[in-house]
Length: 329
Image 1 (cartoon, rainbow, N blue to C red):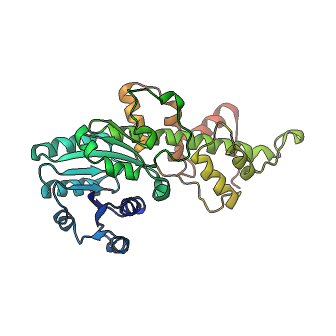
Image 2 (image 1 turned 180 degrees about the vertical axis):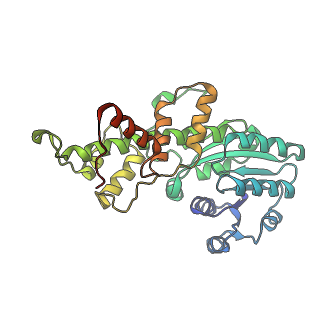
């Protein structure tokens, strides 16, 4: 199939490569001409502008925007809406808020332009492993573009099949291939949003667990209860058959094997937006999300040396118990 791709960063560029290697025709554009020129050497066609990209596509046209959530994606989709026609499809594969998807679909509907939101997970490993895709939009459009989605998805691979799925008619066979039509417009990004919220919690659990183990050698503990643990080895053994085996653990094991003290990291952790949106959704639905909320707040905390809240804590401790702050080391 033919598809246009706008945004050729780490994921966008590899999406083009995976599609091109499978025989699809890609017309590409990025504000920086360098990645487009590189992909042109690998079989893609580089366009000089968004209008040029649209003009190079045969109708009905499909354009996948793989850009950071926010103004740049908003502007690009608005521009595409002015250039494309009835029957064409705009895909947003970035991490957009699902509420923006619903609004965009309403705005494009009078022109007959279809809109799909595709939550895309796989990061920099997607070229080799494939991308887990969570798709929202019109059923017929999703079905028509299945060759694109099935190419990008990982497929069965070496993961053991869920035996309980066999013979169950109501379960979508695409799910075990690594992609899913989650529902109408917005559903794909909603599912991806929750995915990333869960990811925050899982990452925080690993981080805290390893931190507890690291501090077990503290001189403040009884001598016979201190353990100087090799975290790299622990991460590695957990990868081999334990119930916490995961890709996140794989990444942790790799990082610790390279540098047991992680000296190259500052510990300042950003959040990409989906964590906040997940908590907002939980509030809207009155659903408790204690772990996910706490993991988001820890990321906020990581960006400050000390918070005002901690100053309040110190003031109270001094007031009720005469506890003086420890001197700075």
